[in-house]
Amino acid sequence: IPVDPFDLVVIGGTGDLARRKILPALYRRFCAGQIPDDAQIIGAARSEMDDAGYRDFVGAALDEFAGAAGCDDRARFLSIIGYVTLDARGDGGWAALAGRLEPGRVQAFYFSVGPSLFMTIAERLQAHGMAGPDTRIVVEKPFGRDLASARALNADLAKYFDEGQIYRIDHYLGKETVQNLMAIRFGNMLFEPLWNSQYVDHIQITVAETVGVEGRGEYYERAGAMRDMVQNHLMQLLCLIAMEPPSKFDPDAVRDEKLKVIRALDPVTPDDVVRGQYLADGDRPGFREHVGNAESTTESFIALKVRISNWRWAGTPIYLRTGKRLRARTSEIDVVFKDTPHSIFGPEAGRHRNILTIRLQPNEGIDLGVTIKEPGPGGMRLVDVPLDMTFAQALGPDAKDVPDAYERLIMDVIRGNQTLFMRGDEVEAAWAWTDPIIAGWEEAGKDPIPYDTGSAGPEEALALMHRDGRRWREIR
Ligand code: BG6
Image (tube, rainbow, N blue to C red; front, side, top):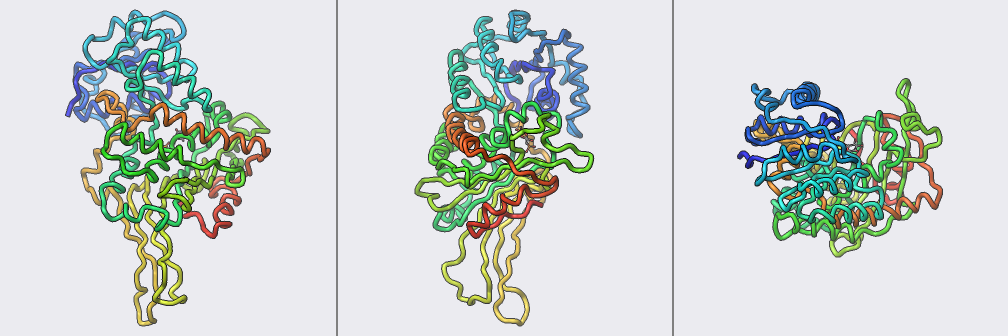
């Protein structure tokens, strides 16, 4: 269903995010017939360029990043693209931008720039009459680097915009399989009755990457895996897996429940944290070379044991880990159920547990480990087999049209649906939990432990679970 005509301004329209994600996402939605021909997409950045120059720029970005997706009429898409040269810190270009917008329709401004510019951009929008009640602004992570800076950003934006106008992106929420977590939990009778500490021994959340920090060394050296991945993406996964059922699938109902999870998180002591740094591998530089600091103490890997102090989860730990240059690119959540209270088959049948694995990427799907009888005459021996399903197989051709995270999220901005965006209080609560963990390892003077490319992170991360009599699922 096409949306109503809108104006979308991408501030930072010549930047990396615009090229790689935003413009290809808009193109794919256009090809899917969702963006009408009289919508306007305006790139705005410092470079001197006219509309035609920017259309060439966008065409090149699509060649590079839009993949196989597309439609025959690329020219039609390019015809809705325009460009304004804009000085984000000064006054140049703002009046021209205002002149390009069509009154009476949704006007969205995507702040595809560093957070240090958010405030000046908000001020300029206001000064040039572009901060009306129908304006929407989209901001990317990192939303601050600690509680104080996140609060300051929220307060700054609140001077010009209501919470209902601010769309804070966490692209993990736009991933189809992440939304599926809610469908699996709240669309089935099967799981929810068992979804608590009485039946669940523990939960593991793994987001493993094979890439290093490559060209993002400068940013990453100041962030590290905790700020880059845990405070946002893993936190969102944790919330969706642990939250109470919202009364309806509505932005505030969902976000209220997520917030309660974050607020129920226990502080994490340095003993429950393992940080690592990848080593050089043949010709591939190590982390310290990538970030240009031979003494860097920033982590490219982190594993944590997290506890949620509430009725549902007290006593069921959640183990989180994420890292770069690991064995495989894989994101999954494993819900490990408890042993049966009594084995009627005796000790020789062994210990068997049901594990529900939700694969977020790649090979999206779910796998439920079920215990059955080992075939053969040798008595009642048990074996675990997978009840495995990939969504692509199960859904057939319908699975092909799955929009990527940015496609989904940008269209949600235009439609005015904030369910998959982080609310200001949620971001602040996540930082309030994160800050003392970082302070804890800084005070304890615990440096990251080196690990090999292609491993599962430092050995100590395995020990984090072994000492509890548990083990990580393999990274495959
Ligand atoms: C980004 C992080 O938010 O997410 C990156 O800044 C990380 O460091 C990326 O690589 C992972 O996203 P995805 O979609 O590839 O899992």
